Amino acid sequence: MVKVANPVLTGFNPDPCLFRGADAYYLLVSTFEYLPGIRVYRSEDLVEWDYYTSILTDIDLTGNTRGCSIWAPFAAYHDGKYYVVYTDVKSTRVPYKDVNNYIITADSIDGPWSKPYYINSSGFDPSVFFDDDGKLYFLNEYWDYRLKTHNKSAGILIQELEPKSLTLKGDPQILFNGTAAKKTEAPEIYKHNGYYYLLTAEGGTESGHQETIARSKSIFGPYELDPKNPMLTSKDNPKLTLQNAGHASLVSDDQDNWYLAHLTTRPIKDDVTLLGRETAIQNVKWSDDGWLRLSNGSNQPDDYYTVPINEANPVRSNEFHDDFKAGKLNFEHWNTLRKMPTSDWLQFSKQGVTIAGGQSPQSEFNQHLIAKRQTDVNFSTSVTVDFKPTNYMQLAGLGLYLDIDNYAFLAVTFDETVGRCITLLKAEKGEFSILTSPIAIKNDSVKLKADVNGIKGTFSFEDGNHDVEIKPNLDLDFLSGGFTGNFIVLDTIDMGQYNRAKATFNSFDYQPN
Image 1 (cartoon, one colour):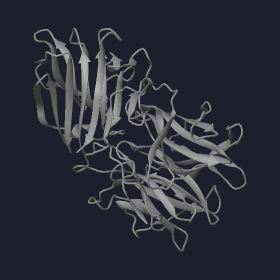
Image 2 (cartoon, rainbow, N blue to C red; image 1 turned 180 degrees about the vertical axis):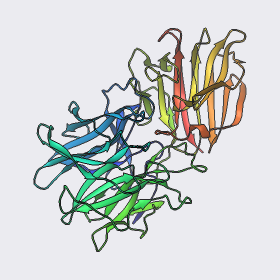
Image 3 (cartoon, one colour; image 1 turned 135 degrees about the horizontal axis):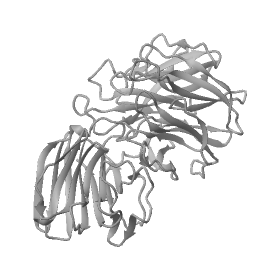
Image 4 (cartoon, rainbow, N blue to C red; image 1 turned 90 degrees about the horizontal axis):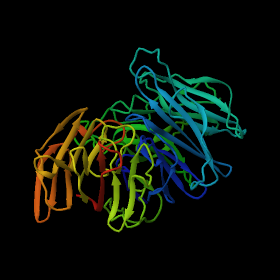
């Protein structure tokens, strides 16, 4: 028996879909505005999870604001074919929610994937269910802008989908209205011992998050609520390591052992979590009266789960070094914002990766940055940058980046008084500030560093033989919240002339402490 520590996917890896493919188990997670979209992790034993591929590599999310874009992918493997459904969220501005739901198919998890088939826009978190009679159903949360509550998730819709053409048949039906917890979303159906089991996330992806289960003898209901609902939640125990538990999916192995993957967070202090929403797995079982229960006898998540195998390889470190000599981005670690990288702004050479200047950190269109997830509470990171700006509108450097309104950016730039210099910029809830006066630098290449210890961060740089510390123990709690978790970014900005200023980055290091 092997004991596995949770979370199994650390850092920004939310909304897990756990399923069994042709040759392995897979976990798919949301990617929001970061590309490539829909990350896929693979395991042959449910113990070791490795990044395997990303599915959406030809998509443009330009203009989608923070917290939008690719939500809650769901995948199924049926009759030798893979099906993936997902939402592209265009706007979440209340009272409306502008979303587009798509389905794509492939004969292999490696692709090639079909062009997206548009399905509907009535709500988010779609899934599909193949019944024993060959019928295919499409489910999604639905949104009712008329509700007086801020969150207007009104329940779950179901509609038949023609399996070959992937077109909707008939009209959608209300499948489930939810419980008093409200905010009902993330529907998935599983069939077991003659019952259809409907899993939904409720309570919102915060402290009230939970997983709700109901069942019916008919796919269209009515659905009977689990008498011990919720079957999974952290809301009653703030001392749990794994908070905000919910948004789950289910799989079994060949020995009829069952596992539940779910979203979770690990607050550093109070509800502050720079790591964002992560993925954990729980052991589950079917009770004598036919309900799904956590194997620990409670409805609270465990810090570990077990798998009945004799041994597994040691857990690998999150340590990462990149000298960019591979000539391409390593998408296990690097992401871009809203657009995939193109050669007009990102190029490789023996000196490293050169990034041409894009728009500012608050842009929702053409930021030219590469971003790595923060996967550890405590870490150190550094990069060497060669940059020769000629005016203050040109900046390049190392940043900690949550979203367009919250970031800290240690930048090489130009000041009319001191020339080439270092400065530290900050945005907190949209309020911008410059934290340091410009510090003159002499060398073409400068090593930029950030050391993060919980919610405290210290920025520094090396200019030749000089090591200069800037703003020690800066409070970083403003990088918590939102949808994605914190990223470490390498960014070049030119607000004067697009793609003119160019910075070359080399020797990137990320080291858990």
